[in-house]
Image 1: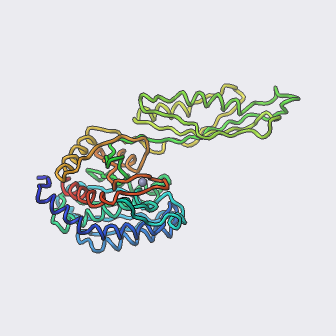
Image 2: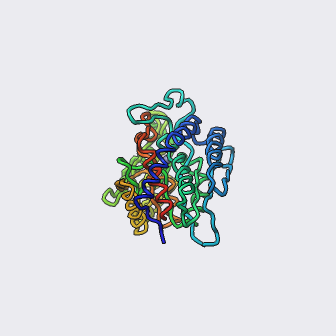
Length: 391
Ligand SMILES: [Zn+2]
């Protein structure tokens, strides 16, 4: 029997989070006041220490594991709770990250500030408040005896914002074992969950031409800038907005002086797609680009970074469950599909049922006005705990 919160459970959850609200916010504040930009090993370890300390008072937390990313990049955090291998249920994975995009010094310029129902701090919305709320959701399940039927794993990586170079392996391992993945990224406006995310690819196209004097013997040159200009037209034409595929040539460089036929040129191409089929089509086309001038040589590097998170039937069914659980707490849960990618994309390639955007409502991810809504903390916490208990 799966748990569905009745009105008394809902009231207990709401009360629990109203009572704990102050402590959740002070934990969030402590976490935000440690600066942990991706790659800052010291900041990452300090952030993980705060969460590991807080986890000690969660009785149902069987273990906390800290995993060093290579080259002092930071620490990944894994908490396992309700571990009961005997019942054979596949785990539920709560997935987030402790790194931020904000360099050290941002906190001094924009310290923690509460005003008009909003809380501003670097990384609060993406996604330190969500890390704390997720931990509290596990605590609430223990303290209110809403024991989830499956093991719960909370994985917080330290390199999501910079491409998940070492976190990806952990995300794929844990998502591959899980029945459901709940991603703690910021929600879309109005607290909406994210049921689809585009995938991303980044390619670099380099052209090798041949230099020559532009006045004396231009015919001996091979103009790499002209070649790349033609290739940019060709790459851009791969976009199919009606299918969700976009191609953006974001940077281009080449040449040395106006009077020299340029020998080299380079462009960076950002690609977004909604389906794996489109990802394959665009990747094959870019790798297969042929030069217009047969004397020019093309080199393509890079590739698909994150696969798309598609709104499969399993995703739709998980969203429907989440919507019902939210409704039992008088919260209307909407859904959105977005262009940005997250670790939810990697998870989706390994686990059928992924729901993203379950962080705390607010606005301004990666921006100066980054904030959460103060009243969303308790509401999201109660919802997340109920969802964990009912899956
Ligand atoms: Zn994030």
